[in-house]
Length: 418
Image 1: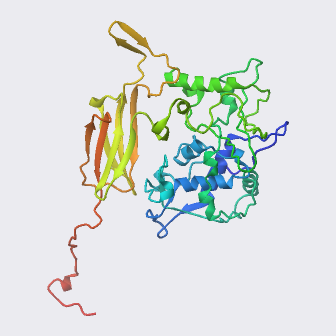
Image 2: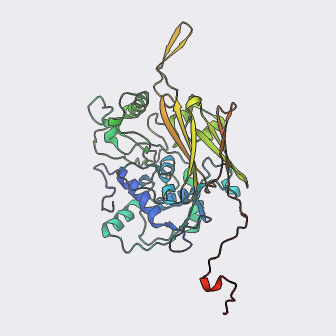
Image 3: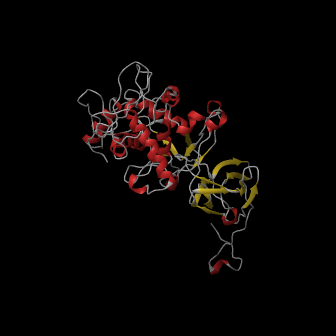
């Protein structure tokens, strides 16, 4: 992945941002500016953690000079949660590699965050040694960030949060994917435009949808119709004559966003909602919240439109943490519903419930589950779901005798002289 490709100016002088550049830039930053915190040559220090909120701030601080090359807020969070596409560089500190996640937000400045998550077993590297990298990789990193190669990541970068309150638009990088869905009336590809940049404070964002499916995988399901409709609407907003796979950064200072593209980096339903629902994150089906005390965990899982008779809960331990798995069958989004003599057909172009079929939700915990534990799951009518009780290992375990094996000459009570 360490090649020399970078953002290059277009004929009109606008900067072009390739999807691969921003993904590579995110990977490069987390790969080199963080490292595993180890107790020795092998083990991870899981008692040492970093707040994902601060890591996001550091990333955005690095791209402060060229924000058009950075991922947007939701895309960055999605990438850090391991949702990159196959073949793309993955977030280096995944749960699968032993870097557990928790929600230990105890300091005041983190209260009220929608995703107060911590990544355990890592530490920051303020000035990494990049001398061993290829010249192409060094050049690409410098061009993406607009910074010197040997810059130092300051402590205050973790507090750089101004970018969170500024308007931006979450768009797909690859216009070729949109072009295959919708063509403008003149036959040219749909052109996407980002929010304008106004001085150094403005943080316009080039982003990608890391959760979207490839067109060939869409088939003809309702979910594909939803994605198709959303992308088509975006593509129809504005037309251009440039077919290059890029996002053009608008350099004007007007402060206006062209068309009716949704602002911020939130899903489309945010514009139709208000109140605390805007602070929610996660899927509709099998949404979870994890509570904790000194004895164990209480996991609350909502399961609307789920066949409870076929529901199954299991658990396992990895080398570093426990995982609770919810196995269920969704009954939502049936094509036709009958009520008395009336027949209703599903016509919603963007239904928000998951389609019918099997699903699995894995819920990682910060610690391992005792091997002798008996987990219990209770149906709760209030949440139309489950409450799962998970015990912890006690901090002080029972003292146990260890059998000592002696050589034959000492077995009959001989005294060992030192």
